[in-house]
Image 1: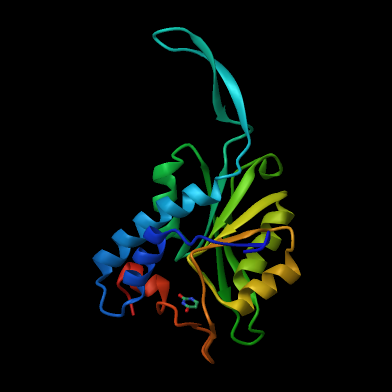
Image 2 (image 1 turned 180 degrees about the vertical axis):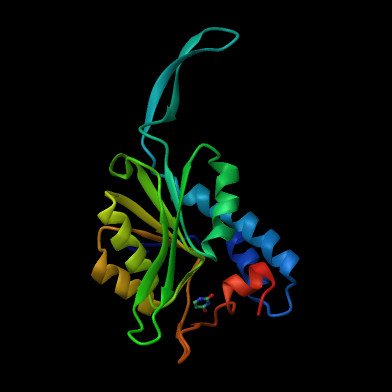
Length: 210
Ligand code: URA
């Protein structure tokens, strides 16, 4: 683990991830496991959120109770697979603001092109958590974070389920200020850009498409 990369090695995360990786795991189970794992990852990714105190009254007395400081978090899903992680995280942080970034790969230039971008206001004042289950080449993550920085985001964390060393290196080069939290650093990318051993196409597996 480095400051730039945190691997969430909690046994429950690792167990659930292994079940997700299995090729015969059904769409229904995959979705349920993703939801459960996203709660555990949300717990980890929010570990260092700043706290302040608020004066409250319990039935017994007044107290300065700890509450999260600052504006509400922004959760940004990179479409479409990011939505699987987003749903579970929102169950834990229901007041977070939510944004979406849609990118496709231009077949001629192989560069990511934006087709959708809608994000919360005042990103410069928020902690922004970007979610995408698979950090593979890193091209779409880097492009999404470029767009978010253009929109004002300064304090960004990237959360994924699986990362390839190639994607981590690309992110570290382009956005060294953005820490990555993941459940696993896998071996490598294959010639088609899939993470190995991986879990296949995360979007197809969570939505039951092919
Ligand atoms: N996207 C996926 O869904 N799976 C991979 O292995 C790589 C990128």
